[in-house]
Length: 168
Image 1 (cartoon, rainbow, N blue to C red):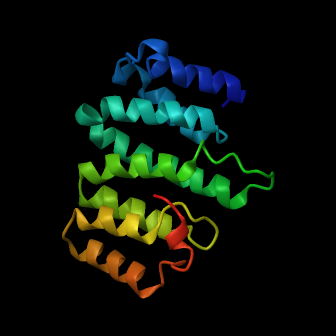
Image 2: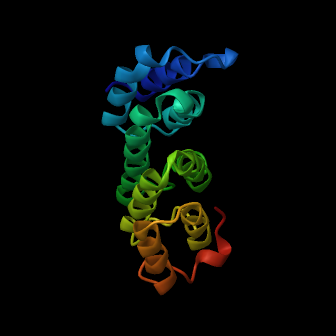
């Protein structure tokens, strides 16, 4: 944890800076864990996402739990923010959806964990539309995915009324 500008700069460097050539994953993994344990930093999360996109193929086992933690931290930040406007990670629904796309490609467990997290925060945060969540779940056939689809479709996944006007 440290000043936001320092943490963001460090994440930018690890993501490859302007060269877009990310640092070796084994070298940066401890810093990723530390970054996510600190205060929320919208710009830093953009670079976290770049790192995840670059390294997911070889390091899904290590990255999927970190991506879920990042999604939780973002949802917590939006749900508890008192300042207006809330730092929403430069269009949070778009960013949230991109990380969910990464998780969906990694399998049913990660996808269902992320969708369940979104539904957990629905009373406070509308990050993705029901249609977007259902699309991600449609990539998997399992009892848990079916249960989450049913929860969303029944309206207990909240709020359906605003879905038509949101992108995601």
